[in-house]
Image (cartoon, rainbow, N blue to C red):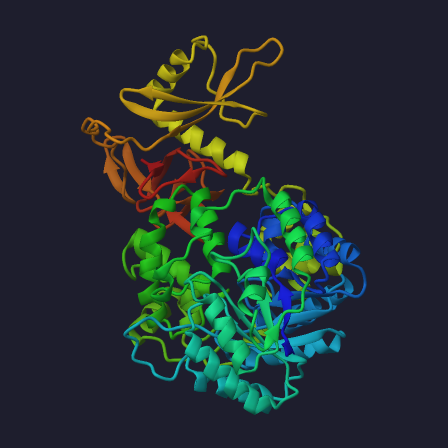
Length: 638
């Protein structure tokens, strides 16, 4: 009977795939300790989005997180992180000095192995990073990235078993040093047959002693089938996760896979009861976190528009942040064309983010009206060679809008010439801010930019998806739209008219069903505190068996497209939803047509909002940190 080894992805990919990578370090330490006690000796613990997210959303240092986890698991457990080749742990590809610093620092902070992949399967992007990983004493798991192509695709070679086998051969021909090979399907869209054929070919290439690792997700529903196909073809290691961060957009559960292998020639060789106990501990640790329904469901649309679990929930959290979650299904559908016309790079970060950003802009601004920076750079070759040639029309649009030509040059050489990349400019940025230029700080600036600087200055926001916060947000939205209903609910419960509806969580609220105008509502009421009235903490509409037809809605307040003239001046509207990142013009400033007024951020990309006319700024109607909707007026030029 063959023992199948596994890596527990709960504490990196589990966090990223189901919670947008926004989890506080202390919250999961008891579960990590319980997993070690259960006999698990290999964990994915950082890298990928779990590097930037700590600085962007958690007010935490990723290096301190790694140190903390090493103390929890002890010296013998294998702690692994994820690297994106030349991009290391960000969306921007880096110069050679930062790529080397990445491996050096991760080894310093308790990591023992790094999985290294390139979303385009351009072996040049794995070469230097792989050598740096080995140079600093780490185990190097080189990766080939997998993806199922949307139905109707005419390219028979890209993302076939033969394509993956040829990629592995190129890795061997380049003499890149590695300890094992991972076949990584981040979107969970490769078919079981393709997986089986790929692993068979890899086994022939590597021989019986080569270590083959397989990674997939459950997003499209085929995760366990693909794991079994890989095992039967000769894979030695698989990725699994623990509940509650298993299934859905995450990985197959450890206990589920243990059950699937019962009665076969394979075993995980685990103590079921101990792992079950660890999962119970993990559930307790994660109980306060909010998971969107999209993170726990099987989504058949993903096979048409391959979206990796690790990017899906990250993006839906950002859509919630920007009040545009209603666009989610449209964006996922739009991804299909974006993937097809972009050269079939594997939908895994950073390419999956480029796909999502371009699909988001296509939905909010019109198809192909704007080429986003990341997607444009990808089709132009500034992240490496795509598996297939991108659509020539998209290449033309990218060249025109980004003002740069298509290239076949090695991205490392391009980045080494870029004066904005590398250790030296990061050091200057730290010195200008009066911050110590430690190697850790240099790497944070190089990979996290202005948000990294904000963290080091103590200005980073805290945005963790807690269940209580989600309930409060939903209640606040309801109250804004239904003030009359809220007043009737307060009155029907016998609370004083002046008793406010407070949108915050309270310990031990009583729950009621209140009917207003024939419609039922779930209502939570917090008990009275000393000297205070009881108050409503949550109002949620309930399904009604026979709800009366609603009155016709009033016409919505008019919004402005960018550059709409009015009697008071020209109103400038936001072309897309987002959060105001910077305001660069002030009231009274004289501006020319094309001058930037403010910058918004959405889906990890910045969008400048520019004046469409010359004149004086009469009003700036938004402030930094405020969310805006498509076509919302943000400024007036007179």
